[in-house]
Amino acid sequence: MQNSNIPTILVTNDDGFQAQGIQYLATLLGNLGNVVVVAPDSARSGAACSITPTCPVSVRKIRDNVYACSGSPVDCVKIALEKMLDRKPDLVVSGINHGDNASISLHYSGTVGAALEACMKGIPAIAYSLRTHKKECDFAPYSEVIVEWAEKVLREGLPTDTCLNINFPEVDCLCGSKVCRMARGLWHTEWLDAGVDDEGKKIYTLTGTFTNLEPEAADTDYWALDHGFAAITPLSLDMTDHALLARLGKSAD
Image (cartoon, helix red, strand yellow):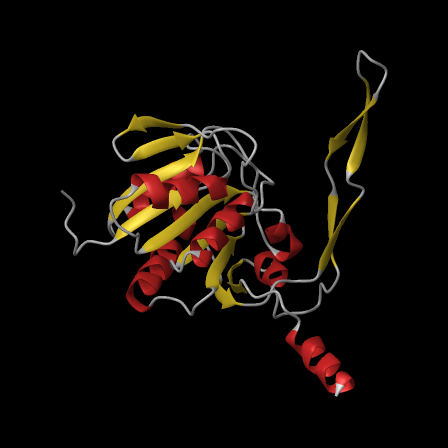
């Protein structure tokens, strides 16, 4: 039986349970509490907040406290909370993603989606991502920041309906950390021609080029990453445009 005084930490991702990032993260956070990994059985990059309503979802035990789920990252969080854990976790952590989830990319991210799902359930959550798509990475330069923020959130919690999106540049030594907003950006040139299939239908491969629309703004996550800093961005479930809401309310009076 687990000691109830020791924090329970649920760890997931969108790269799959076998990814180096989640294995490193689970080991690192094992020093802070009882870690349970429930992650997709294969890569689910770009899953965002998607769920799997059209077919059953299965869970397979890999080893003690490590489980592979056939669903999306959000499915992993949902099923872990309702069917697998014997208590509500003190913290949900998603990552470490291979590829950053800064600026508008966070809207597509299964890594961030899992953190938002935990947030919807009233559980403090952090998404960690690294700006590289290498399968084999050195995560050591980011360990101190990962632990620092996990400890801080375990100790102090987060405001209601808020989670943290933390991105790292690929560097040997961080210049520090910056708490910042998400940059305005744009993905374009997103489809490559990939020929035709056996039935003569055209095939396209999703790719894309990202453009930072405010490269000189020093208060954004992209600026922080470009200059060697970890970017810590608070995210809110409330997507209401409160400024426009106020203006529309006044115009209706």
